[in-house]
Image 1 (cartoon, one colour):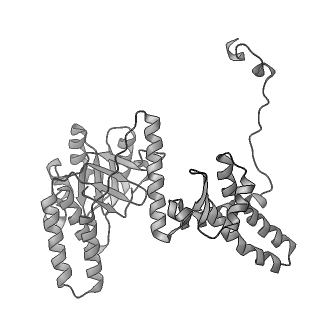
Image 2: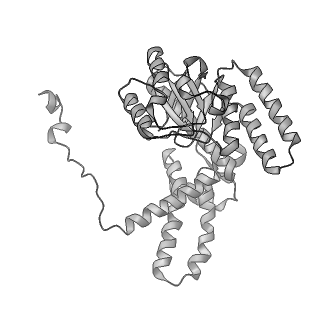
Length: 355
């Protein structure tokens, strides 16, 4: 799908529509592209009044949105009068204008700039761009184009290629190639369907987890999964324990040593097998080998596709150590006291609530 991802998020958390994912999704929105800083609400009132009548969502891409303009838009959004999200324009200086021109061409919008003799007060809905869907997060914005302006986008890419070929500056060349990649790279769209709302939510979360895991794997590579990597790495702690003379430090190393076998044991327990036996067998194997709970076999996990992103494995250990240290140095913890089951709950008959 044609589209573009920008490294800019919403200017205010009040624009968030999905509190769980902390994103704002706009379906079939209009797009305002300007290089101006908007602080006076009077500049955009005529445009907003037109959008209230048409009831169309709006994405505002501007230098910044502040003051009474921001507060007025936020209040009207929270009241349900307007469906608006604002983001800051990507890039800086002259390159910001180039990026904004690219976005305008992708969405079919008129670039609102005083250099071109267009002011915000004179903007009408005909000058706004269109998109199929826009997802705005805290730090990124994804624009999914409706494909109407494909020929204009191709022409723009050819123009940027000529600019890149004629420049002597390495920096300008890199930025030009980045713009080409943004315009021509497109956006991958995964369509998820399900019979019920609950199943659909579960599937969407699974897809998001898979995408995040893939991104993490692209950054730092992969390791064998199933907890086998941590089990193999803990062998490196044995010589460290022998060298350590301090009893407290040795106790700390021993805690980490024992915890690194927990994932393998838990996976085996979930599969209905004794965790200690599986852990002992896997530890004797060479790196890459492990227990596959799906097939109930000991095999090469890399070849069978049981893998974890290295980044996730590292962070899991670091975060576990961080939380453990915090718990150890905390004087008290708050827990929920389990309620004792009433005598009537175990007996037959109607529950107490229905008596």
